[in-house]
Length: 541
Image 1 (cartoon, rainbow, N blue to C red):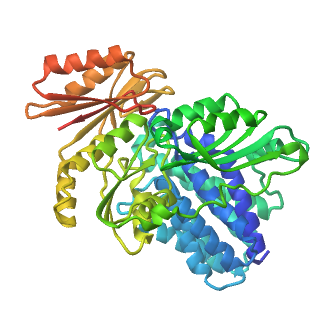
Image 2: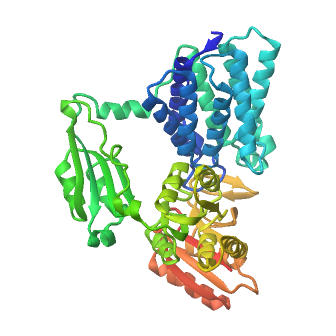
Image 3: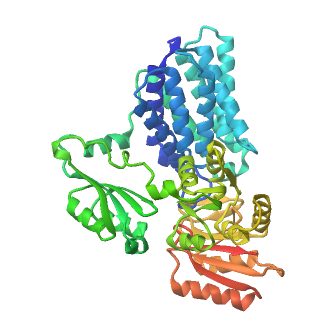
């Protein structure tokens, strides 16, 4: 094949996405830190799937349309640093496509090379030994091959691209010592290789199918049992206070394994596949009134178009809301943390964090919901900053500023330092100054045996993580957090904020609080965060 058109490129994309989805857990497992939230594979899978969904919705096989729709879908769906970089690769590819209805091998190679260049430009401090290295080295070498072999086919180019991507991936441990020590290759580069391998499989006549999609379609195809039950619920005044998304999901999980819940202010949107639709409706009705309900019996045919997709119009109250001077958007996971941030003037909470990175679109929706001239976004995680920044760049008409907070304590400190009477530049300076005085520590457990920075870690051990570095391990979580606080507190430390999560018992919290009070002359602020994964988050100022 000497040229590809929109139909072929679309087929390559579907095969690449399927291969990435099938290998998602494998890519997640490559994360260096053995914490129970490996997310690179998941982020890349969700990002690419969003792009494919948009391509499918367009129904087009016109190459410029497919490329444009893909890059837009990837941009909006980008999660985590790996997802943002992936979106930039195919943004660069789209720029090279332009209005071309077909790409020959030389043009295809140039488009991939442009994607690599744009991805590098999107990262403020590019690190070698990552997905950036893999895309650059592979596209460079494949482009050189095409220049040396002008008659090369698309299949030959893709074979070289995959070969060089695999070789580059194998070299990543030599460029990043932490990968070598953990005996893994870069997770983002591995995800990219999965996409390239999927491209090649399609061109070889053996496109890869998405195993999870096949299983899912099998449960909702003609002849399947159960009901696809959807509803949009407007929470009552009492329901706004009583509704807790995590608890609601737990209740639904007893009736279904396939659950979608979106809580947006006073509206709750739900989709489940269940044998007991009446029970599902009863659970929802306790919190308010239904705005729309749809139930499809799978035994009678495929479900209709989702009502959740057709109900995205703003409410009149949102449209008529008066624009104010300032708005603050923050990211966190846990009912306690949400309550804490709202108490510190946050207007909108984007649900997520280390266990699930929000997408660019999540931030864009949040920006649209906050009617303010100046908006500050607090990502509270280093892996979320790029998606938030990407959202700020595409949002027009308002001053949106992303403060690069990398932890919950930093985000809280920034909020406390906000002054509604100050001008935007003064606020940004004061908030970032406060962030610079915060040390962050976290305690979680290891999910596998590994070695990090010369420290042997056993599965099940509790790890003390100080500003992104594992500094200690222990078989006891209270011992771990107390030793972590020992390393964090200095003579001039004044405040210790102890935020306890779902896995921390009240007796354990009390023991830690007493330890701090007995050993350090500081003010102690104990807060219930309800956060997952991290049983304790500690901030020291």
